[in-house]
Amino acid sequence: MASPVALDIIEANLQHLTVLELSDSPSLSSASVLSPQTVVELFYQTVGRKIIVSQIYSQQQSSSMLVWSHMISNVVVLLAQLLWPSNPGFQFPECLMANCQYTQLQEYVRLIGPWCQVNIGSCRFVLGQCYLANGEGQKALQCFQEAATEVEKEDFLLRLTGGEEEDAHPRLQYYNKVLRLLEDVGLPELVIQLSSLAITETGSDAHSQAALWTRIFKHHLDLGHNSEAYEALTQNPDSSMQLDCLRQLVVVLCERSQLQDLVHFSYVNLHDEVVSIIESRARGLDLLAHNYYELLYAFHINRHNYRKAGSVMYELGMRVSRENRTPSGLQQQVNCFLSALNCLRLIRPEYAWIVQPAPGATYERAGASPKRNSDGEFSSQPVKRQVDILELRDLEREFILSSSRLSLSQLHPSQAAIAGGASAGEMVSLLVQSGLFDSALSVCQAFSLSLSPVFEGLTFKCIKLQGGGGASERRLELAGSQSAVSSRQHQGVKCCRRGLAAALLLPAQSYKEVDAASLLRLYLNFDLLEEAGDLVLEYVDALLGRNRYYGLEGPLSATSPSVWLPYTSIDQLLQTLNETQTNSSMYDKVRDRLEDYHRQVEQTTRRRLLAR
Image (cartoon, rainbow, N blue to C red):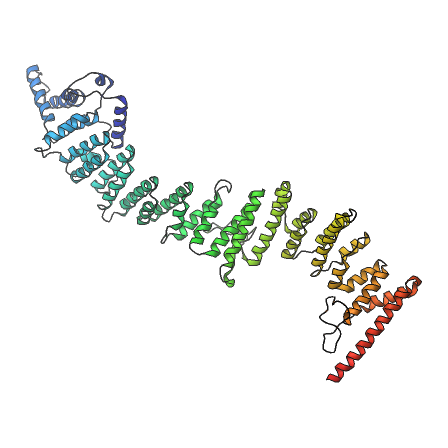
């Protein structure tokens, strides 16, 4: 008896037949689903009747009449021929398969198997379909493999090869049909097994090999077999398909965050292609959504290519500075430049450089046709692509600038967007306004900028703190000391002048050690005669070895280096003290001390001449 079949099973079977391109096989109608009947009745209604009637009419003479008794005997004979297992046609088993009579079909194949030697491969194939419908995939695969040996001998199996590439071997065409069927059912492990078997029969057919290796790669990757997928990729003989698989491998593993596998594959003869794929995705995707730069950095670090790794981090830092001007973006920018610096410091100094495209540079695209202007004439040759060579000091400047931006954003988060796009000169102004003088000084030194804005800003801060008293005075002393320390390397005369104009007490002791002559001129400009006189007395004593050495290498002696006095300023001081009667005692002290100094100079000079 024919078994009733659920509609969902009929739909699934129809989909399988469509994949095999056997969808023209007669299948159950809605009426036959509901009416029980024998399998012979089912075959006669769906397939046999049409074939029998066609044969009867083809054999009938046009002038003779059909006699029912004679015709019924012909129908029975023809039906028996169609049902006979040794019939070269395969209509009856195909009808059972098309109408989802899997149990009856399995029993039919079991009964005829021991003695029938016709359509052996076709029987194995439909039996595989039965196993597949019942969820026994491994048994189905075994049947499909056994049927492959009979592909070129049986009409039913030859029909399965229709629609495939004519140049391919019939057995490979058969394998492709079965592979699509297994993919449609959702059995990737069986697809991999059958594809591996098919590869052994491809011979020198490189195109078929490439298609099969691509299929193996795809299903291994879908199953999470990353190493096997990579192995299949490397075996692919078609370079274009291999590149497509490589691109898919990179994208999928990145989406799964399986970066360790991606980085540690050897990529023999594929290294440049991998780098190119990751670079193109890194530059083409949104940084906030995908960050392929870090993957590329890890890829180069794993291969000890520190210069390339540094170049990647520098490029990422520059992109972050343009696209993500937030506190977190500034922190990422600092980390990028620091990583780039560390990479370059790991290689020999003569190789510690990276190449980056120059900003605003244009280049001619390879293979592009020459351009013409509006008059139809050839335009001037485009500028060749230009690059910048960046060394350690260039990266250090970028690191210092980005660090100052981060410091400012941490102090004033609302200024992160402004700081993110500020130049070095603009950053100095912003840092001074925020009181970050150390950072401002570092930026000035890194970019060889004038220190005047830093000193002026520091001076104004000191002036504001002066009126506070108490703790403010201590802050004033601290600020003044910081200015003096900076003045050891750079002139701070302008700042001191501003401080004196505001009646600010200068850190004189520190200034004496840096530039006593400049301090003396400042005292004279602001009529601080007592302070100027004391400074001259102390300075002369220092030259004579009676006081601290204010920046001097040693006291006056025949073997010490030459020293000098700011005589112009001292003469101006003496003249002013002489004209001012309230300072007569200071005038006498300075004059006597200078006379003593001159005597010592004269004696030292004589001893030096005698020593020659």
